[in-house]
Structure formats: C-alpha cells, structure tokens
Image (cartoon, rainbow, N blue to C red; front, side, top):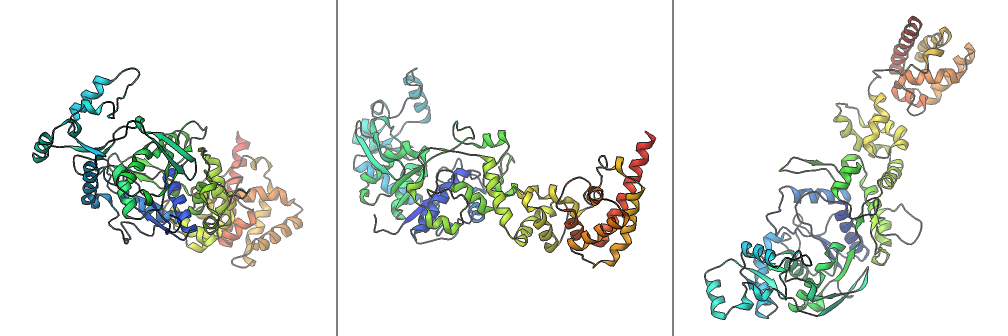
Length: 519
C-alpha cells in the first residue's frame, strides 16, 4: 500500500444540500491527497434512483468550486476510470454479485415487500423490535439457500424479481485498523445480510463502494463515523472478491455535534438556532423550501474551510488561522480527533471576521457588488472598495455590510436628533452654515485630514468645542450615532454630497428644536 500513489474519493448521493459535515469530509480527503501529492476523486453515488433530486449534482460541483476543493477526476472533468456516476456503471456490478453467489458468499432472495413486512411483524418482540434478515432468520425466508437447484432455476428463468444478499458468517470476529481509532473489531453475527444488488439491477452502496474503490484504485477511504457499522460488510466483500491485498486504509471521521454536544448537528438544529448547516443555499425543487447556506450569509470560502478543518483537527500548536498551502503542508490523519467536535457558530463568525479584516478591499468590493445590486444599489467597484475598507473591521459576515454602510449609498431618511436637539443652538447652526461655503475651497475630493483641519480651524475661530460639533455632524451624514470616523465618511462622500447633507441636517435640527419648544 505504501508504494501506491495516494488516491482518495468523496462519493456523495445527489439527494439535496451539502451539509458542512460532508464538506469537511471532502476537505480531509483533499488535504490528505494534496499532502501526499496524490489525487482526489469525486464520484456520484446515485444508485438509489428513488432519492435522486434533480440539480443536486450540479449543486455539489458548485459547492466544491466555491470552497476551492475541486477534484482531479469527476463526472464533470472525466478521468481514466470513468464513468464517475454509479448509475452509468450499472452493468459492472451484477457480475461481481453473481461471482459472490457462485462462491457461496451471497444468495438470491425472492421475498416480496409484503413478505418482508409480514416477516418483521411476525418476529417483532419487545426485546427485538426490528428483526433482521440474518443468519438466525434466513432459513425461514424465500431465498436460494432454502431451494433446490431446479426451484431456483425456474424462478430465475421466469425472471422473478429478486435481490442478492451477502451471507454474513454466523460468528466471526473481524479486525481492522482505523487510521483515527486504531484497532476496531466486529462480530459478524450481529450484522444482517445486507442487500448487495437490488431488484432493479442497481447495486446498493455496500457493493458499489467496494467495486468502485477497487476499480478506481482508491488507496484511502475516509468517511463519517456513522458508516462504521457497515465496515464488516465492506471488509468481507474485499476479502470475498479476492481483493483484500488492495483494500484501502480506512478512517472514520468524528461527527460534527450540536452546540451543546448532544448529538449530530442537523439542518433542523440550524433552523432552530438560526445558523446555516449547508455550504450554500439549497432550494428543494419539489417543495421549493429554501435552506440557507454559509456562502449566501456572507462567509468567505477561505474562512469556511479554516473553520471546518478545526472541527476535529489541529496541528498540535495554538495556531488557528491557516492558509490552504499551510493546511496541505501540515495535514495528517494522526492529528484528527476521535471524539466529535461541537459546532460553535460564534467561533465560525470569528474565523470569518479574521478573513474579512485581512482581505484586500478590491476583492471585497467584487463580492459585495452583487449584494448591493439586490438592493437596487449600483455603485462602481472603486467606491465600494473604499467603503469596504472603512467598515470591514466591523463585519463578521458580508451580509452585515449594508447595515454598516447604507448611508454611503443613500442619504439618511431619518435623523436621530434626540441626543442633539436639546443642545442645538444658534452658534452651532452658524458654525455649519459658515462651514458650508468654506468646503468649496477644499480639493474636490478632500482627504479626511483636509476636512478635519478645516472643521477644527473654524471651531477654534468661533470658540466652540470640536467635541460638541462632531456628533451633530455625524448624524447629518449617517442619520445616527454610528459609522466609521466622521471625517472618513465625509471624505468618501465628497464635498458636494457632504454639503447637501449638512444643509438638510441644519434644517432637521431647527425643526426638531421648534417641535420641542411647542410641546
């Protein structure tokens, strides 16, 4: 195994949105492959056509593109082991299922859905509420283990619907090494006879994953720990098909847990607690239900990746911020934790805040421009970049940009005069009406320093404290007691717009004072 080129795969089912746990599985696969100069394969496991959702495969591709985790081989890109959709590989699987039957490791089962329901009802008990089709019950069912050759041939010749099931040993101990958990053992007598080939000729996950991993020369199989109970079936299939020496090394990744640590994080938890659990927005084509994603909330992909990698891995130091290049260099499976990782949305936003703060303003502007367009605000990238530079320290997600910057793109429709009107007087009004024409003498696009110097010079001449003038000025520009440094705001707006807002503001304060005196 050590001499083989590393090949890993992510094999999702196209059934809906991509949970952040799925993206983390992609990430660990990707980092491991790139660290070892290997290849990362995307394979679509669409064998269950009843659960197939139109658009889900395209959604998966877009998610991986956004995250910067593009595969080396995929249905979209092709590759030496195509096709990469299991539905297009249907003809491959039956021969291996039949090979297992011929070797006595699998059998034909002709039980109808009604007979299976009756079986479960008959053998259900308080101690065993969900009876399994296994070594204890298979002798009571309608399968080839209980038929003569002639009876079996007649059913097959008549094309009677059937499945092929693995024949699990009654009492064997299977042991394998998990790259995260170390030695893991199972008793085969506790595992049911899983269906390998369905009545429609499509394989189940159990057969398809083994056949495809073998044919695609996968060297390492990383998946969520919820697949651990299926490991005995897969290990036996590798053995029974004669491929045991080429079986990939296994790693079952820890779960991403709810914030309280009580169980696996689900979409329902995100809905309940007010945060996304999908990488991107997903709209169910049947119900039209929209599930929000990290991308649309305003997460940068680099931050999303950095946050995900820290859910269950660290490099052994206190470092938390990693570039992709650093992650590829440092990643190893022996630093992946065995226990689940609690998802902390506040920590996720902290990661995003770090990346927004350090991202160049022009790149931010490119991301923000479509968000502004949705509000029917059409500004050029240069202006948006300037504004982004002033407010980005306050942003935890990009969708907060508008709340911190709307006054750059439109004049305030209201003014919070409550804190200013009681202290407004003729001297302050005179200051602003005097300053208005003085602004014309400044450069057309003055700097914040130019504006501040002019402002302070006039205040000194008139004997008014600068501090008493800055809040009224801020409210004239923004409508409230918020925003970046006030002279930065004015410099960004420019002289003409600043003058218009001062004129409006003076009038607003006069009316507020008049209204207060009449009441």
